[in-house]
Image 1 (tube, one colour):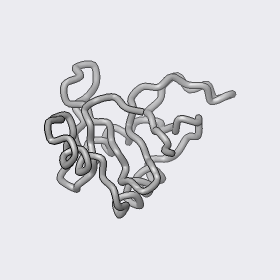
Image 2 (cartoon, rainbow, N blue to C red):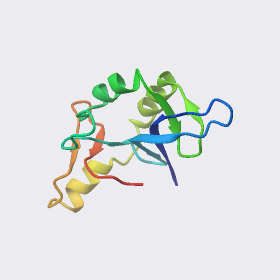
Image 3 (tube, rainbow, N blue to C red):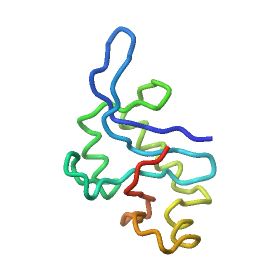
Image 4 (cartoon, rainbow, N blue to C red):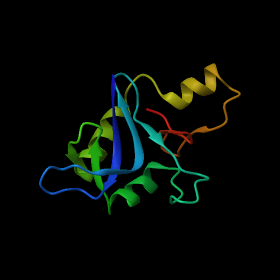
Length: 118
């Protein structure tokens, strides 16, 4: 089981209902954080590294798929905590499915995929 994280817009300050803007990625038990990367989507800023996500998130609100808001500091701590997990999605895919070309590791070893996932 895992939890997806999103940047959001149009947040209702009364009920916290909101619209998803960008999928940031997913935290799953036993796995490093899996980021959604944006390389070729011309409607979205190019985001290929955790450092680029941090810049993007500095001006955004972050919500999990259950509607709970977290701060950028909390999100960075989550990603850092998950870095020591046993499994990495990109490493797994590159080993098991070498023909897939839309996954990559950023310079810090964070897992990215250029496709939407849940």
